[in-house]
Length: 72
Length: 273
Image (cartoon, rainbow over all chains, first blue to last red; front, side, top):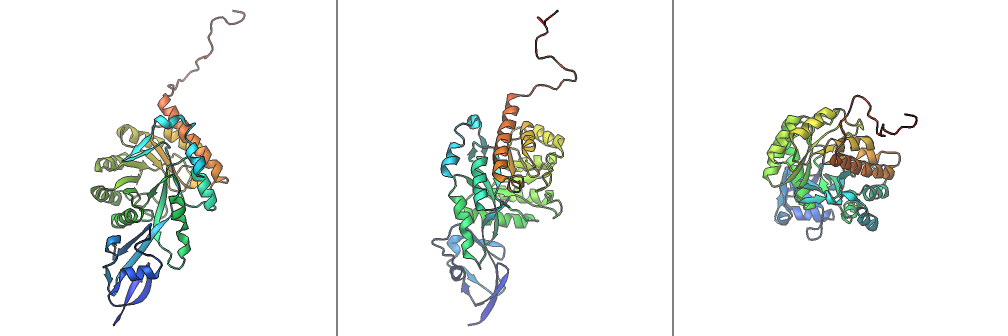
């Protein structure tokens, strides 16, 4: 299996090709069944929670995982 | 915390005068930002003391190194307040629309404080990008509260697009300069008599908030004036009362200004006449 390089919140990460988005999220403690207050975009397009399971990542993809913080 | 908040409106004669934004009905006309407080406890006390029912939050990357940080969101979600996510830090309509969509997904709210800024020095809105983003978000079903320049034409266009509230600045974000152009703010109110208008940004102290309310504004959104005050909780109280005082003065109808004095005591029956 080839590795691919993916940006996760701006950090380059090596992952197996066609890694599942949901596995990436789980590895950071974000479980689709319980996580609240989190949203995900891949390549500047939102990936809804219902799509996390079947979304796969390709080399060069940029993943953004966001939540709410203090703001004005 | 919960108890003090729930009792905060019982003695509040403004209860019959709510602020309605989209499907949201607010008894308090003070909207509060959550950034820059000395600590979480001061933030929570400021929210409770201000009596606010709508607080702003930013949408930012999850810190993947520190999964403990998620405490902020779960704490504020336990409060009897609604969350108003913002698009702070966005320079283009495209960025702002993406952040708004992420906010809707993360927080399960259609509310968005739309902020599309033009530069770092003034943090003033880029009107062209702001209007573009507002249009797209309204079409996508968002309840848009648009942070705007104090330009009557931009504000009118935001209203025409279908924004739920238009929020002209009093002066630049975080400047505390107060109402630098009250005439423009008044023009905007005169031109847009029905849409909720909220002064957002630039409030420095209580009198600024009261003055904006006396001009007929429907509410005040502020953050730094409280969070960076020497005593934030006390300033939150000051702002709560200033917003209420200004609102009452507006609805009560002030007396016209007169050039010369007019005695308030009767002239008849004076001693020695």
